[in-house]
Image (cartoon, rainbow, N blue to C red; front, side, top):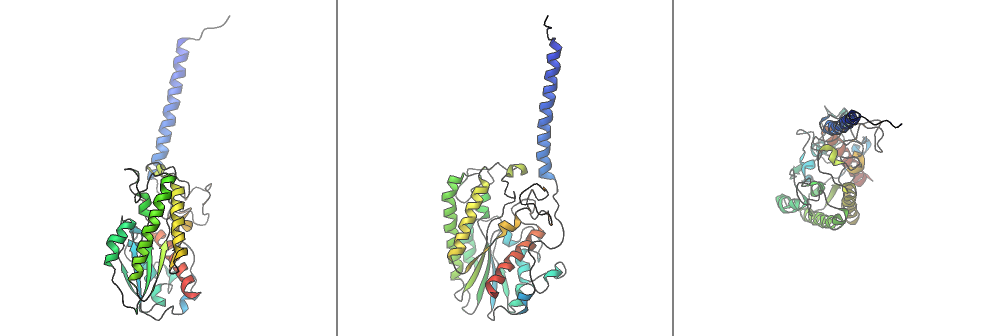
Length: 315
């Protein structure tokens, strides 16, 4: 004879199911919060590629040279104190902090080097055209320009999904929208480059950085309590394609590939199973807000700029 299931047996099953559901929910929320607040290892010592001393043994140019910084908060120097930003270190190494880079800076190969930085935090490419270009002097023909430029990153990440995406604030857009908007970004960057060229009738080289990815190619900004963006990695890749095309088009514009070097140093830096994990330096190179590099990130960026400058001026 078939036994009837007692009513209290159903009750305990429901209690166990509810406990399981609540436990899973609490665990998920806890993991999300932990991922946001946990302090990722930043490491110590040099970051980025090693720079040889030999290219700095001779002067690169006899003419007076101006090092000009243009663009967003990366070039302005957010994430590092004065004198330790990538732009400052490019011009003058801090021998006390980075002894391995003693004599490996632009002041060592351009004895009459002067510098000026017009970059501003939280700015997009159109603001670089409208606000920064007018602030740049038109230099004498005797002066050669070396321009460090970071532009376009904020065009992608603003307004962090808090508003509908648009051409200069793409966060959350689809790849289809980005195909048109990244072409507009390319047009703005070309206008900016054209404007910079007019400031240096005696000639200049523009070193244009591409855009790094704090998610290490995973595409999960939502794990940092930001809005989900399904196509973020593809859109970033498209924007970097446009930047690379610009560098191919203009002989005096040179690509500084910070994107490749920073993969594995973002929010998944300490996860060995990730594709871009760096066994020898599994450390975080970003500031807490993720838009900007931290101190070691700035060190890495200046080395990447120097690496490209060595290629341009010594080969």
